[in-house]
Image (cartoon, rainbow, N blue to C red; front, top):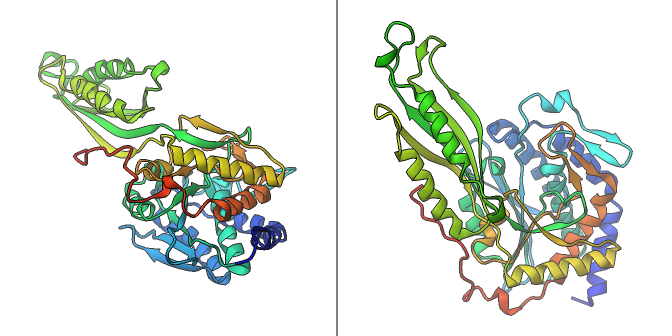
Length: 407
């Protein structure tokens, strides 16, 4: 296969010659609305990526997600006896239909703007182009695969089992979520649960028959205060009630109410303690005529650094230094699909996409000048990571986090 220089230089040069093409593909993807609940929009992103990958002679196939939006699996072959590298990316965004038309892709100096431009359509672009560069210039020592998912922004209820299946056979996992605004990458993420707390009360006329009612809203208010007391910033635990709804009319004692809750935690052992505390709050009804239930609708696993992940970070940092930039590994309170891979004990690194910021807002941006070096660093990491470090012995790797499946 020749020397490392013989392998690396053509890949780097190929990418360097295609920055305008990267920006053009990014424009196309940002111009497609792809909210997590918009299967047609996510499918349109998949179709555009599929078209590019086919044109670049990259193997690509669709995987049914159970909705009209397919996952995409793509790859470049390498030695069959070597465990593949896996890249992850998600095709969905948080923005509603019409956002792309209201705020179209635009160039503003050294920044690119548009809904989902950083989180994470720029990451999809560099992953697709890295696959294309490898297909065009070399046969990598190990196979390189990619899985593009459909619902990361809502905790991957359709995609997480596919991520687990792909990660279990991988030597290591790279996720091109946006690079931090300070240029760093991510080696640690919190775990998280999204859920609904629902309260059922009893309706009555607020003026004529007030005592006959049992207010679900009042009961929910008590529980919200109790829930938010679970926040412990020193321990990395936060409980945020982000949505509240309920009631029938202003002059009716509320028969129902519910709250949408975001729970974040830093370590796997905190999860069971949190759930026990939440169950106690849900079970304690100040008004015995009310009842309550808490349902988890989505969950991210925590990304806990392992020895293998730190070795992977060192390879990425060496690649970055080759290209003239520095990147430290940092922790973030945000969750991502990287946690599903890391929870299996697979060396995992996240935040490898182009540098950007203000994700999930109208001011979301990507630094234009970071697209090429981030793509090149991703490629060098894929090419340079050792074929047989002890940490990658799949027979000895153990899951770091294995939550029960009853929630």
